[in-house]
Amino acid sequence: MRVNVYTDGACSGNPGKGGYGIIMEWVGKPYVKEFSEGFRLTTNNRMELLAVIVALEQLKKEGVQVLVCSDSKYVIDAVVKGWVFNWVKKGFKDKKNPDLWKRFLKVYKKHEVKFQWVKGHNDHPQNERCDQLAVAAAKSENLHIDKEFELSKKGASGEIKF
Image (cartoon, rainbow, N blue to C red; front, side, top):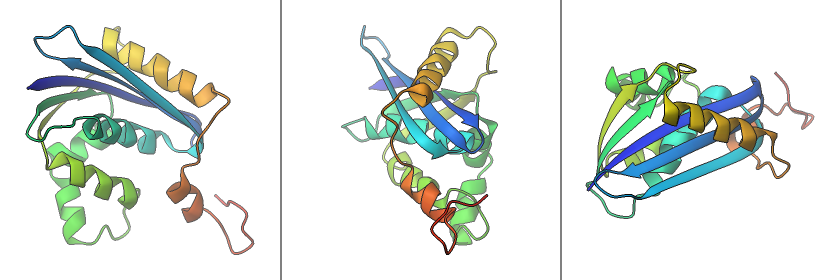
């Protein structure tokens, strides 16, 4: 089984309201699925990474060949250049988003995942659609809470600080 996954993240302000968009296309089958979700306070990089995680989590069988197409150098370089694997060895010391990277690694190792960078806002149909999904999710009224992010930004008074 092969699946092409297209992802994008968006954030209005960084941090700010954010969202992700995903398109999953099963190779050789006319099956296409879209996903999106919005959050009240997050970052663009968190949404880019969360999109990849959620897409991989949708796969019910292990060992799927997955091509992830993303405009996020943050996500792609971290994996393709092996940075994330060194971060693991160092316990994610001084690295952002360790909660999401740990979640990513759990699902990443279940499949044969390759990454392809696509230039954002360059008329790539699936990337443009993912961007629309992500932006719409960030603007929706039913925004979720990015608990790990918000907890990491709370000061002693309980107020969120940046």
